[in-house]
Amino acid sequence: MWILLIEDETRIRAFIARGLGAEGFTVDERDDGELGLRRALDEQYDLVILDLGLPAMDGLSVLEALRRERPQLPVLILSARSDLQTRLAAFSLGACDYLEKPFAFDDLLARVAFGTALIVYYIVSYLMVSPPVVAATGSKPRVHLTLQTVASFGNPPHRDWVSYLARDPRGKWIHGTVLRVPAYSTVDVTIYQFDTATGLRNPFWGQPRGTTGGTINVNGKTLNVLDPDLASHTFAIPDLGVSVPLKGVGDNAKNQCSVAPCTLSEAHTTVNFSFKTGKPGKLRWQCFVPCAAGFPLGFGGPMQSIGWMDGYLMVQ
Ligand SMILES: [Cu+2]
Image 1 (cartoon, rainbow, N blue to C red):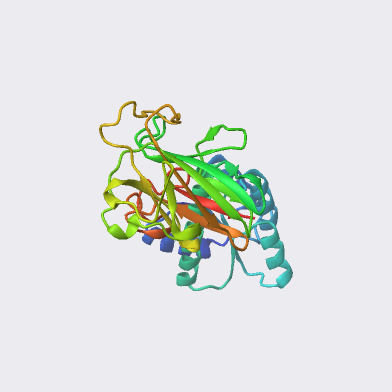
Image 2 (cartoon, rainbow, N blue to C red):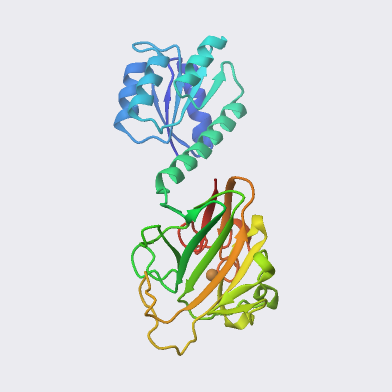
């Protein structure tokens, strides 16, 4: 981690730089506000530690300029000024933390660690493209969701990943798993399943749970249990107790789909079921087995990425 330390008091600066260096951080030092700001804008630091009482340019002005130019760069304020007004000014200008001088080095280290957590957060939020939201069709209290599962997405960045796709109200297949449904409603779900049966490894998962009537309809037949060996994926909303086994396509079926989105002229099974939503909230849904290996809430591996075999149910 690369840190810029802007501090004019030589003794304090040397103390911090030495301490952080010993902890494995790379620290650059500047002793006035103007040079510090220029340096911060010229380079790609992970964190800036900023004193407020600086020559050439006051620390709060440096902070303000940094917020404008580099809104995602975490800034930790270090200051002898402990008055509330200065603190509030620093926070309102976007400082991520404020440490009063004199301070214990351990304390600074803890704040820097907090800065690291922020950096991870910023990187994650930068990498996470906000996924498209697909709304259910129809209106409260009964709506419809149409999904498909594909054996391989067929396109970059993960050609060979299995995935869910959702059909938007205009009939277009969207590679997205953020679904919007109304609260206190019945959701009728249709899933076209194009993947072959891989089996659910445990008969428990062969039984539909949390659906209206405790049943599912597979290719026009109502069932209250599916042979788990015939299943390919599950559709599960842990918070609502919903778990539905999805029958797979036979290994030797003709005209299997190779690249998403799949069409109904290709081999598939059609699964229908209904479930009820409750109060508004953001719920997680996913393929529970086999994709998540039985781990709830997305901790089961790469297929459990939002947009693939895992998503959000926005109950509104
Ligand atoms: Cu799965």
